[in-house]
Length: 416
View 1: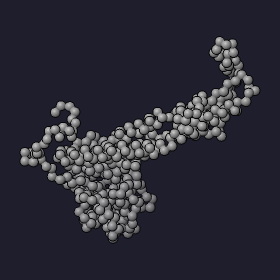
View 2: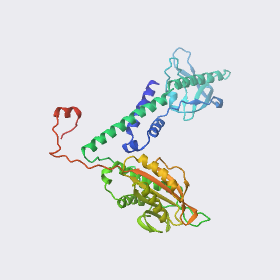
View 3: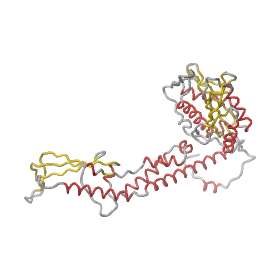
View 4: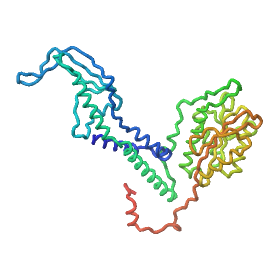
């Protein structure tokens, strides 16, 4: 068991170290810990002693050779095959508890049952005590294994937490170091998590029987928002590439990946109803998703953005999104302003279910000319860091450094 426990600790450390940087930085800490520990969960088997069954078979059975020459001989007899069902990890039957009184019962282990073979040439002997005695030894070993693993889940969680926090801290410090140098931080497989299917998918639209307009299913609506969210995370991780990008270029950035998923049905700057919308997804000639991209410029501008997107929606358009890109500091304050301002809009009817995270809001709005109609509007807030002016390295701002201190601060492998 001591070796087994050390293997579990090592496995958790290795798994936590193998998490990709993107997942490490974008996934909540507790979700990462739960996943790592869950993959190394220890499930001590539990015997179902109420469901023991016996299978009887005729055949030759061994018996001790009493001639003094040693070895076994075989005679006709009976074999009793006892089957004890269990739930848990079958590999743990081969782990010896740390208790000095641990038993070493003999048997066979399958995926969900333990088998004991009892052979005898004298059927008058009672085999029940033999079966129950061996089952008792196995059960006692399992009890000791539970004692050995008591508190293991908490220990493994702490190991994973320590590794994950240290990696996050080190990555943050390393990236800050590069940013302060004024160099471009290059990342490996930056877009690797944005998967575009080999076969582009079409959208199965919903047609309500009482209305007649096609609607975007909630699952596809969530998927479009997920694609937009993943694309924005690329901007958050590469601020220098997007700091001066205008709204129309960011819109085109989204359209590339939406078209990768939805067979080229996403268009930009498309006339619809009373204006031109940034992102429009159509299916069978009908508009099923509309979105606008806006940089955060304050409460008044935000309310005007709501007015704008609502003007773009005809009576057939049921789902839309407003993408707010924040280049200012304190996105928490921006979210609070959005939460406070949106319910004051005259067409606001109520809040829908909360979005996938704290920076996504869902609201229900009435249509301007049809109070009975409803529009589901998601407001997504993304922090697009604003990179300050890079400071070049030249003679005027270069400083003399102590070579000995530089060697002590860094260890460099390879040739320069």
